[in-house]
Length: 70
Image (cartoon, rainbow, N blue to C red; front, side, top):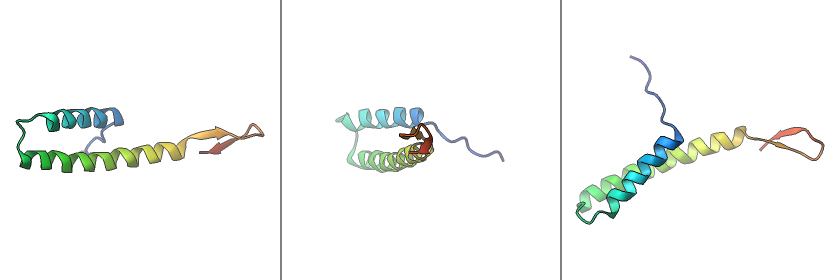
């Protein structure tokens, strides 16, 4: 079985936006709101982890014109 494709940050942010819109809907039950919230926190942790990895790969030019990791 092939590995599951990792979602991009853009996809994760779009999914979070959808979750926010659902949570704003007054017709969503308390139980469903809690499920959405729980999934949203997992997705935020995923995004944070992805951003940390990207940040560690970034390079910055120091005063001597050399590249250092950020």
